[in-house]
Length: 377
Image (cartoon, rainbow, N blue to C red; front, side):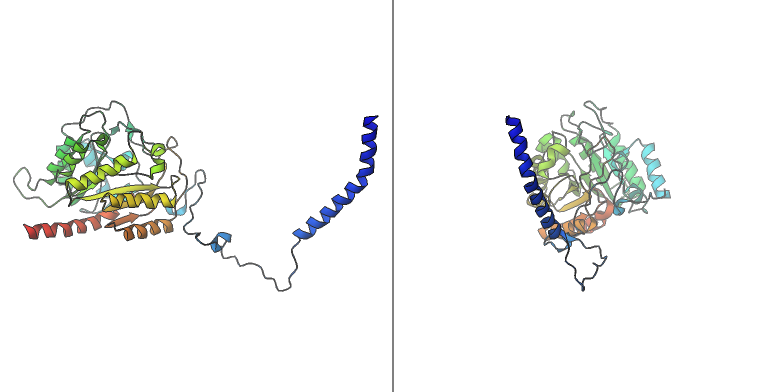
């Protein structure tokens, strides 16, 4: 009987529900219709969107979403032909069993940097072998807990090669060697001293050579930083790599933000006239405010030169690119960095920490800094 009563109630309500349904259908249909305007004109096909009219949002500065297997046009570079200078550097490196970060890290600028004329070609020599004791998620250099012992002849081989090339600016970098008591600091400083030796084995004067070294953090030991800083080099670089919030996701757990800042600060304290340099990768998921704060922290640590470049995934085993930063955005970072007081800012999608773009400027900067010292003497 209860079921029958419910059935009768629904039968009575059905006509009323149908009226309600028709009312709402007419109402919503009318609200979605566009009013007709005889003066209406089609929108111009000028590429503008709603974001173009929202304050603070610029199409040129907005990051580009990552599409699988695709890169923006500004990251597509043609492979440089192997110039005679490129082949000369490569053969010389192989003959002396030397390694370069250009090859190990699959740098996109290798053809451009190695292919320059004498005096402008740049190959970043990697010291302490080709195997690192750390495993950062962005880096393609080989890793091992127990890499082979450093080649004791490497400092001399490097010096011989560089002097043979006749360059006037050279960049050295190193793998991390947490397995060595001093992290390889003595090995690095010996290489620099041989490179800076003003005379050759015959006692003949050499052309002046500027040396930049991109070093690790030596496990936080200040003695290692001091050893290299006092070796006679011209530019000491140590990369902070990314913003503070992404450090653990991007770098090996033995590296961290504050430790990197302490390396740069210590180098400046040991040798106040030393030019210090650091690099930030973009496109890892950082925010604009985080990039600004990182740049401020670097300036506070006394860093003179900063480079900013797009992170590019070396292999599918490495961390993914979060976004592609536009050239306009890189230009903005350059302007902001210069306003913060950096002596030089190299900012661009393909800029790398040892990219040659800054070296021409650095040579003139170093020359200017040396003039007051010469006058004082």
